[in-house]
Length: 269
Image (tube, rainbow, N blue to C red; front, top):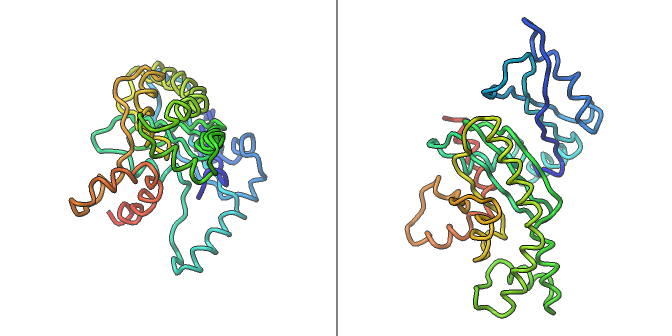
């Protein structure tokens, strides 16, 4: 399920001694979910406490999907013979694709077509999500000013090299779109690390714009972090060796799809 049809946030819940936290969820959800609860399918999970949490306030990851959108997607699945397949919000598919057993904390920066998202994951559980309305589509729109159509501009954005014609113009377009989101994400990660009391272990970037030869060094500079990985979700599955280069290039684009496909194996395991 796309994030645009969903609602994800972390909410503080005050619980008295001995009180079942589940009784508080509908009450708190009404304060945050921008639709009547009767119009959404609601789920939640309680997050592990941070090191400085010694109060009765507990944090809950709240997830809601519009019933209308859920019905439409299930209808689509029925039409292609995938009856009964579970639905989940794309963020959880992405986490499944990119999380490693060796991770303790992970930050995922997803530069989508219309929005840039930051996900912070601890012990395999999504704990923070932040969205900014800026994405790869705006970069391609700027690239259109070079006199090419949108499709060709999209291809230029993904595959140009440093010595390609208009490379500097495309770099300027990319930096003008993603600088703000990356700076905001850097502040949010630093704030999370200060509260957690330890650094985030890995930062992984995904989305079509990560194919740009400038993206990783530019992101390292803005985030002030030495290690920035580009998503390689296909490392989770077996494939013929001759497909290595092809799949490594497709990884940032297909991370959500692969994570969704892996759900069945996770459930069976």
